[in-house]
Image 1 (cartoon, one colour):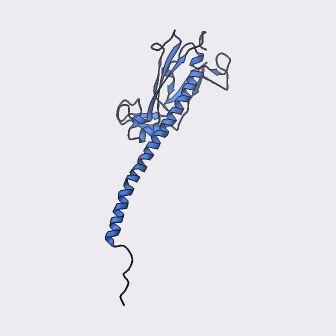
Image 2 (cartoon, rainbow, N blue to C red):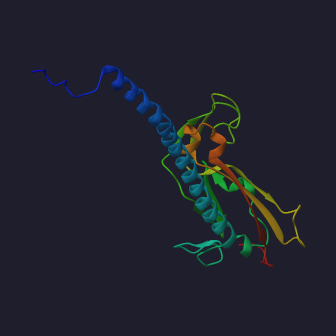
Image 3 (tube, rainbow, N blue to C red):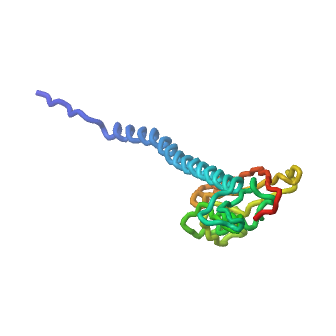
Length: 197
């Protein structure tokens, strides 16, 4: 009686199946890893937008403190409640917002302090001057504010604030660090007639 042939795959069939599987899986894996990068970039942009809203809300509308300021009230007066725009140079310290009004100072959101090494001018942080520079980063404000009270001024009552925000985590790991930086502009109206406290 003849023996039954053993069921199974030949070595050539297994090799062809393996190569076909790899050919199908490789594009899927590449797409999956690219989608992680895309997700990180989108998440970073959402964080920057949230930070921009918070900064502009504080700058425009002010805030309240737990103690009284120079005029006896607990108010930080935003640009809408001021006679003159704040000084741009005084609005940032260690990459965090430092807003002073009514002889009080309020800090914006902070992160754990990190040291960022510059790889080129404006990379990965916008105010990097040269390769090898180090920046101690404790917040999101990528470079100094710009406050223009002349170009867009309407009857000396309007000022334009330009804010550059950088996600320091994404700036260090992104293939293109520029994608971790966004510039925002907002127009504010000065409404106070008397001097700022």
